[in-house]
Length: 142
Image (cartoon, rainbow, N blue to C red; front, side, top):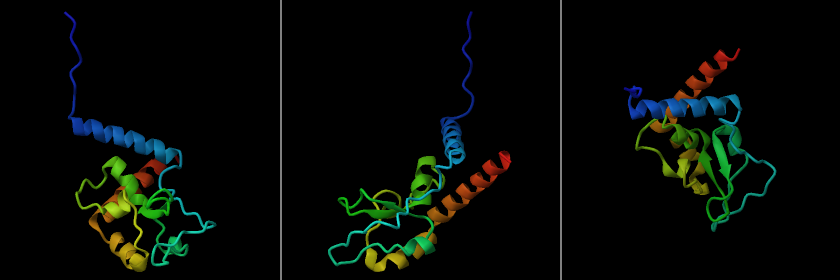
């Protein structure tokens, strides 16, 4: 009589293992944590004649320009949190949709919102988990 191998572990363990495999692959390809930060394009103004300022990239290294957002006018995402969703790093409902999926476009209060975003639990947890994995992956390849 033929026996089938038993499945070991839960579905969440499988998801974590799959996510870990994806993460290692991205880290090895240097694709992870590389935000799109074009400095030589003209950023479009909103209805109030406000627009994204290139110097924000210098202070907020995690800003990722997404040109297709906001009906083609573009917007920014948090590169860390946006990619963290793919790996379910922080597993919390307190993600800020404007920095993870929809895109941030409120240029009037941008610096304040960027600073507030950096202090969110989701951003801090995701940053920690990414840096922990980057460090451990890099040490494995030295």
